Length: 171
Image: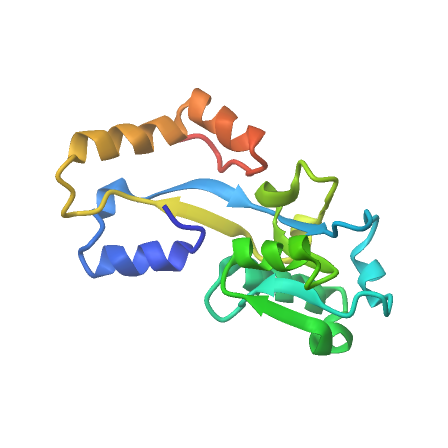
């Protein structure tokens, strides 16, 4: 499973993931969070008190690329770029904000939906299509297929939704 759909596609092309098993299991959303205050708009990051704004590295992290895209779409990127600090992934970016080393974070909604965060409009960035498939060399193909089927089942989809992930159309 990966938040980076391209990564799964590359693994499939290389034969390391079985093509017939690949599916989008969730749609990611972005959330804006700070441990010291709540937000009503992304524009509030213009406030000079936000000296450090954490995002995942947009070079390799889909949520970081989406965060950069959202800031660009709002016309904020050039102004805020000097204050952006990069985590290697969404979890590290959140850790920067949680520890106080950054005053705010734009990260996966699923990591902050239960912390009073602001969900960002999905129109600000391309879809974050989280996908997965069965590793071709698995010694437990039946278990892997069952897990992928579970993710697409009503029960699995309910769990994903309850934890802040959007859902692709049912298969």
